[in-house]
Length: 303
Image (tube, rainbow, N blue to C red; front, side, top):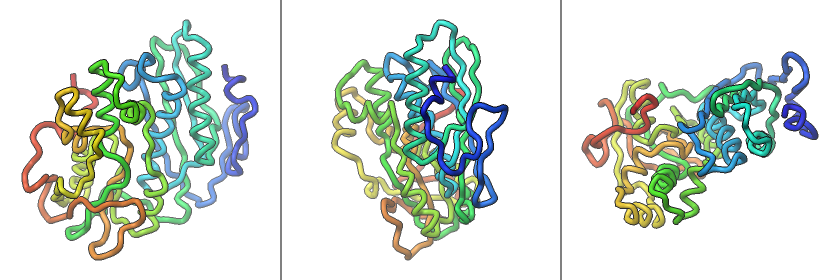
């Protein structure tokens, strides 16, 4: 499997030594390395009756890359560890590998190593290394009262796709695809880092939950207005079709891996960003002047 995964693959210039030795060697132009890691567990984060193995591999790369992009970095290398049951079909293992390599190559990054073990279910653990390119890291703790709150990318589409799959619906294929393989707006995150963002975060758990992380880290509050949030017609139609509330998807749905950030007031937002609220000296996130009922997003250890 390892031989098939690495055969014919091209590494970027930042990879000095790739797979094949006991460790890889990666060049760091900036002198600092942004590092993040994340896992996908079969039955918890993906199902092979819903997603193809290639989709799963691409999703693993996207969710990791979004984390370092939110810090203002760009991926240079991935380390991938995979646990597989012994009866896993070769086409499943190869499909996951192909999705990972394809997504990494599209970003100009390399898959430089990892591990392969036997496990009771499929587990994929990805560590990404990123280059800040001389920028200061954009942290959650930098939001200031008076800042503008803005988002880049779609909201609620992955949650809508998940809800449709759980309901057994094959309608709204674009929403189903958004759940299977998220499309983070990486270049918008880079533009935010170059455009003076005070704070930024990957929207993985849900808009309200992740903005809440910025509020907590920065010691501020935020006020949002639903009138400033764009809700596409297919999201509204899908919610009506299965008796759901599209606002729950937009405000609390996770895994879109879009970005939220705060910017200095009075300045033009970078391309791809839309203003949705303001930062104040309160605490927590309000929507249309009120606290949103229920959970603000994904809870990893909820039943």
